[in-house]
Length: 361
Image (cartoon, rainbow, N blue to C red; front, top):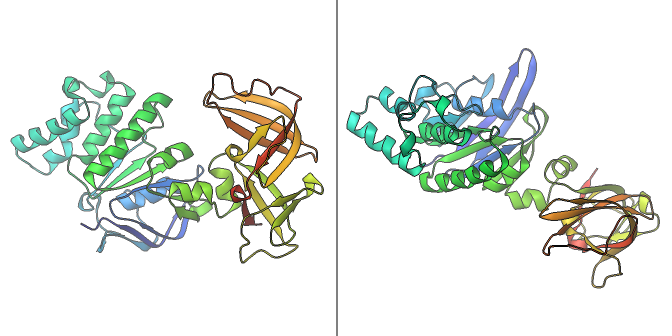
């Protein structure tokens, strides 16, 4: 079945303010697709337009070959899980999940079969007769998802559904959502401003900016490793950003680094000698050592200004001889990573040219 979502020239304004402007977006059928962007960029509004909770000012929305732009909510085969779960407080867990099936007038036997199947799958059997107020946040989230999928919609929309959960439970629920989408083969659209969530769950993702501008669409790896704009680079993950000039076909010069030339990957069509550019270098791509290292394309010296222990990694803030501050992350593979590096130590930072990402200013 074709569960592709397609938006064509979709525009939405509220109180005279443009929220989305001429959005064209195709979300592949039966994929887990994430919409990532800062608060106010139009993510939730786009989700609500797909779900039918708001009307477009202009443009069309399709699921497969079906134009759903003007269809009422109950005819779209689309369900949504809200950030606050929106469970019915006066209904039990069983009745919350069964709600849409009752509306569809299924038999009591069929309703019980479908609901009990989900209660078992979501480990909620012992809570079947409880009310939402008697459940934990994670249990409420499971009930909300179960209620949304019990009638097997073509599309499931998730509006920051894990925002109220603690970190460990959020990690667990992300894996459960991935497994659920694989089993259902529905198209999941997941809205979040949390980059880690988006990178974890998505088959593909879109980075949104002001008025829904789609900065980049791709797999999580494509977007993280090969961002196509300064906005994407800064918004997704942590990175070192430098402004400088293309010197020739193989080097890049940064004003703050003096005469030090950075060797760069293969030249792109837009590059020309003397043109300004922005360079991104992820902290985890940098090797740090108190001694000079070999077999790296680039290497410079600096002084350690700060050391931050993150558990999985250690962050070193290093001030270069030219005055630039560079972050380097080291994976903590041992109990005491780099015991010999301390504050005010002189260190060497090294990286391969393939890990440099250059973008137009």
